[in-house]
Picture 1 (cartoon, rainbow over the protein chains, first blue to last red):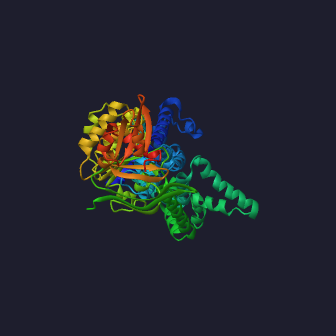
Picture 2: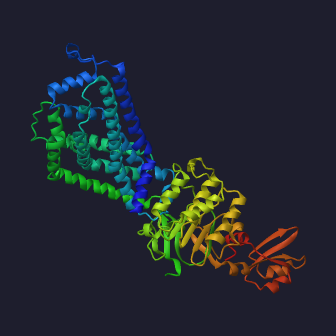
Picture 3: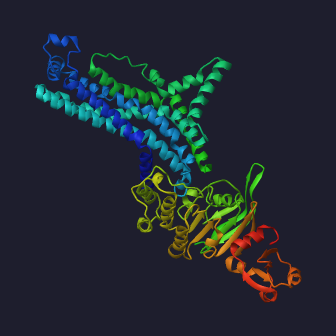
Length: 310
Length: 286
């Protein structure tokens, strides 16, 4: 167990720019924007209606919302916090891609692989830890940053609303916030399992390429897709990749006919029903399992390549 | 417990048409310091890489009872090595390197490593990237010397270091690390610096082991004579393996000839390992 802790620690240390600095900076920017817009820079006259109802500040807006749509407000606030987290998560696909791409490439380039190999750690352990850290630990760090940012924003807005004399407690739908954080993990895991063949492909390229891993990772699928299009005039490979990377949700949610009327329904759908649908669709889908088999093949290849690498 | 650390039968390595290591048999017992000596590209690193499980090979090879190519992880509990290039991760701080090794290596003694480092000027909070070449090697040596391994392989460990540090390092290796329960394998170009610590020596030429001997025996076999003027013909008859001229006098090197007989020809002296190596490599020494 010690070994795995030390390996994961090393991976985080190695990737701390992408795993920690990037989300922290983006979250800080988001917080700064919220602070700036709430303290006068952006007066709340953006919404036309506001003038008519004598709404002068956030406190008033919140009070009115509570009065009119009290049942919807907690969900609306939770969704609002998540919308403020979008900026942070925009960097995530890039972080994952480049971390995997460098994971087995950089160590060969700077020869540190010979140091790692002088330690009693098997190649399969190294490769799996690298995959695990990037695919599972990195998003948890992103989520931790997101949670911290949401709490900071809620805290800041509370102070503002306190001075303005609005309903402060409305800013703290803690139950919903907490369940949304956990649901985010569930969503992510299903998404990551679908995307695993693509992620494992990048890992494989990282172990294979003697240089220009970026070109290998991108060009090989592009060439295959182009060749298929030219010779067979079909686009099955492109379709398959698209489905694995997210289009599977089209199938998963076919039976879901959302009747969305307000933030509560959105939250209920995203964190409740849709998640269940995604799960049941995935485990009964041949595509899902086929994708995992392909992923296992790439991971196996990466391990074999690392055994031979010096 | 095995007394033989390395056992190789028909160990060979081929890259395409090029035979980097010709089928070789050798065994290395416990409690020795073996110097592997050969020109660049002779196959030293190839042989060591096979022993360390860093590449595939042909033939049979057992290191500490393990198959290096399939059991490297397990093997590295008992084996430690420093490759011939700087391999410490440059993005890590020195203290982080120690943290990592402490985490993954059950036989690493952090106090020992700190003790070695305290005798150097290496700053622990500095990144490896920011260290001088000498300091980087000092960190790496501190790490391996603090690992309680049975076999330590050092491929050109002191390359590019100044003479003071090289002396200190070999002294520490001999006094503080080496004992009868360990084996050390060293390759280096600076043969003179290690010959006094070696117990065994192996010469490699063009992928072939051309000589394997104990140091004591080997140095007794080779004798150089500064031939007294007038005795040149006599000297020639005894079949020197190599001849040269120093200070206007002929010098002859002999292998396996009785020392007293040679003393009649002139002043005799034992050869250093470097000279033995050169004499052997020129072909006539075999």
